[in-house]
Amino acid sequence: EPEVTQTPSHQVTQMGQEVILRCVPISNHLYFYWYRQILGQKVEFLVSFYNNEISEKSEIFDDQFSVERPDGSNFTLKIRSTKLEDSAMYFCARGGTGGAFNGYTFGSGTRLTVV
Amino acid sequence: SQQGEEDPQALSIQEGENATMNCSYKTSINNLQWYRQNSGRGLVHLILIRSNEREKHSGRLRVTLDTSKKSSSLLITASRAADTASYFCATEWDSSYKLIFGSGTRLLVRP
Image (cartoon, rainbow over all chains, first blue to last red; front, side, top):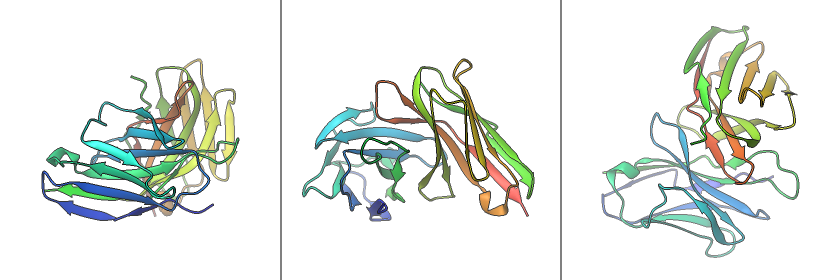
């Protein structure tokens, strides 16, 4: 199966700026996810996306966050006005294919640094 | 909240020894998964064990699940220096298709 690819691998942004993190390519999967990991801390669930809609979101996923699948393949996470505490690794993931579930496939992550 | 919590937080062993990591969780699960993360890199799925399974093997990995104690263990046999990484357990609930991760165990395998 194709890997989950994330771009960019590293992004530095000014506080208050908007960032868009991308997850490509995506094909033939129903469930997509965004997770984040603040340096040295555990991996935290942000949002799940099923059938082109948000399925579930965590308390972290407030109004500053949004997800889209604009062209049916790319899957994006937008942070409208970044804060210092948004600095983290952001991971995209997809669920298993078909009826057999054998674990999630994670992308290599985008390291977001807010200065 | 339903978090997987792991112990030990850090483990240092000699190459060739076995490494055992434990994970505990709080509520009913659909399955429990183990992931590996090399420093600063992505998460790699290692193995999944369903709630109706008690033990599973994959190569040098052995995972056990005790739902009565809400705990799991990951055993890496005959460890290698390349096994050095952080290992996370993650649970998937009965009613939710998402993973809740534990805090991880940092494994160092000395050559």
